[in-house]
Image 1: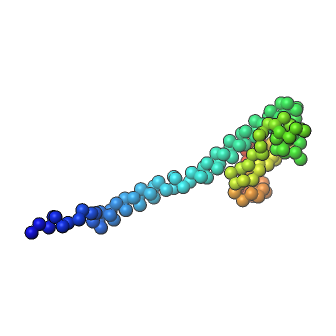
Image 2: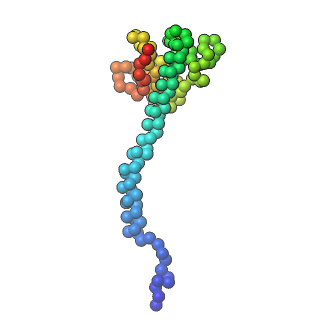
Image 3: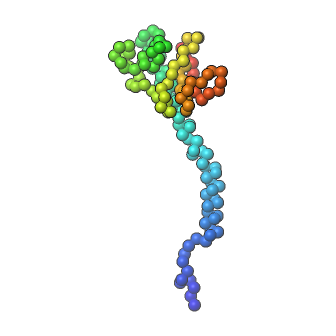
Length: 137
């Protein structure tokens, strides 16, 4: 009798369990690195947008001698034909779909603020999720 002829080539249950265990161990190391990337990408976008807005504000100040008035905010940087030649092509939005805000400090400095995931401006005395740029003059 020849039993090899009727035997089907396949993996045994033990081989499959060992392979799944190895995959599970590898995923426990890799998954945190892969799933944390969206937050890093959002933070990087905010930092880059804040730098671009800061550069636009500095150009505005160079052309006009002063930063835009607080009531105009970022709208003064947009091309609207009245007050600006257009330092920004469109109003920049943070990764959560909210517009950036300008915070005018009493020292004369300006801070570009992203409202963060909750879209609410946090009080400076509490730890909120707002992302503040560096103050500049």
